[in-house]
Length: 254
Image (cartoon, rainbow, N blue to C red; front, side, top):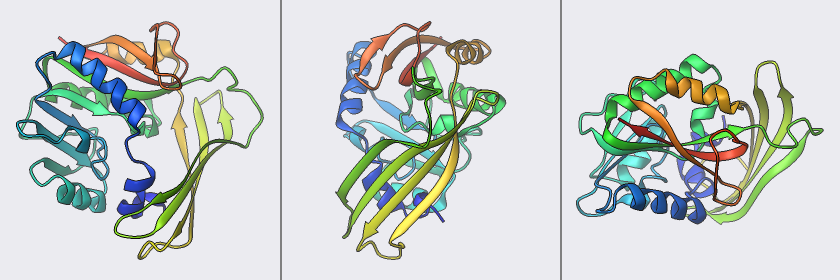
């Protein structure tokens, strides 16, 4: 049992942050000056990165491996195509889309390079020529070898609908340079959320990409090419040969 088993709690604690939303809108305004007309998320969770794009005339679609997340996303976005499935094998019927947006960093929970390449191939099939793929990717930090465990993110209290409050902490607890995997611990506390225990603790591995490896994976696709990147610590652009930390990477589809 972990946070992903409680969609309402996840929705509150992993909401789309305003700074990254603003950056994404700036990028999309540059590529689509007439406005974006369709957005899909290959690992949408409860739809928290799709919801900001909900507007008349904008077609939305999402996919998630969790049936509970799919149910909440469908309730939140009743006009969207929300599918229950694997992000490496997308089956949308309403595409192609202007934008594929995976801003939560879920792509880096695919530990193996071949799984990530399967995601790229699946996304590529559902983005129209001239479209964009936006991915949050993790690259080595300047202090990647620093001692662990250490806290890297905390949030709370946050209101949880329909009632309750939640807190979340992320720690990095181990790093393997050989496998490029960072072991993470996520601790969630809550009060008043129906059905959820007072505390949830889970661990998972996050793939930390070398910039060159990421660019090689993109180069092996048929139609995608790396375009630009922004460090999410300060939302500033960065060079594709100098990728570090949590980064929004933009790919263009030919």
